[in-house]
Length: 293
Image (cartoon, rainbow, N blue to C red; front, side, top):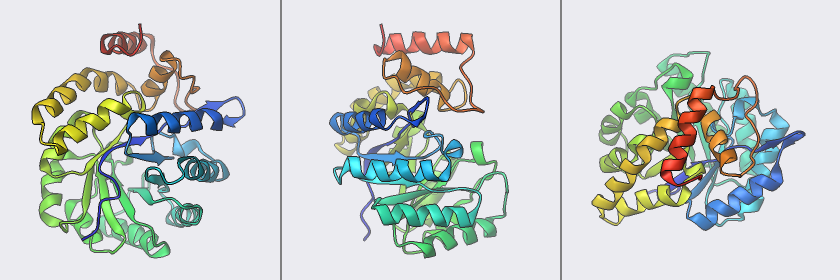
């Protein structure tokens, strides 16, 4: 029986930028903060980390730095997926060489392959490395929904061990179709508790960038059998989740972090600053949550 890569809250950590590139000093401080606050895993260079705008050398350096900074205290999962199978393999091999604990590999975007093409893509990556792989199904961004049947077929491959699933309607089917030790992680911050109730092992979270302790505690309360506490924590997050996704992520979460004096810089183009009305909504939500004054 395979053990989950992690249980609880994995933060899809933002990438802090300054005028010259990645602000590694700030990234290091964020990593230390997450570990102190109880975050259960760091996911570096995912969608929330603006991976599409990271040149390959910058992408690799972010992965290497994170592994060295975390130093084995919690799992490090590297986002190495792309819509180019060869590129995904190259980045995955690098991540394996520098010591990450697992890979996060997204459904190829834009190319819009078939379900068989998805199987061949992920199969090729899995055979190029020995690391455990978490698949990532996010049809809202890729415009391609990996079916539960395709996921279940991929789950038969030894080192494909989990999925970050953003289509909640798939979760029950995945639980029925996939091996018992295949892990499911919520890709939706507003639905963590329902995912856990279906048997998910945790969440790969955007909101954990600003409320890491509470996101961890939501999961832990469920695992401890305190459903009332887990429900209360999930319900409390819903207005925050609404604000964090009122514009394309990670624009609002980076803005929130800057409002909280974390100074993580702006998003890279083509992502732009928030519209004034949405920023005002975010500010009021952060105030009501007690995150800013």
